[in-house]
Amino acid sequence: MRYAIVIEKAENNFYAYVPDLPGCIATGASIEEVEQEIKEAIVFDLEGMREDGITLPIPNSQVEYIDVAA
Image (tube, rainbow, N blue to C red; front, side, top):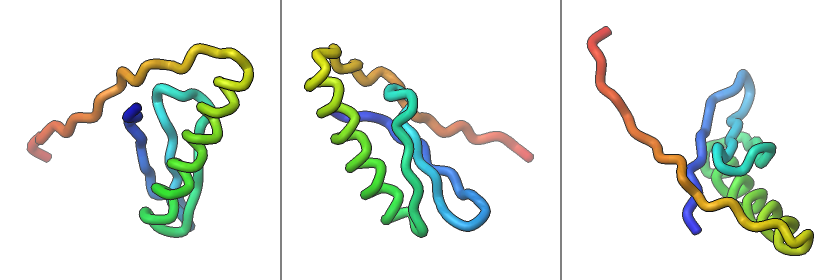
């Protein structure tokens, strides 16, 4: 499966979350680190759902960029 992630710059690190997996979050000192951490968090979250017999959420979020004049 392919899940969209959102990465935001925090004051001293980076923060990532998965819109289709509420509560699935990660932090890291760099973008590369937070990407690896969120990937591990997604796998952990999905494994827990499988073990609990929960149907895995189908990814349906998409990310687009919009250009605007500032």
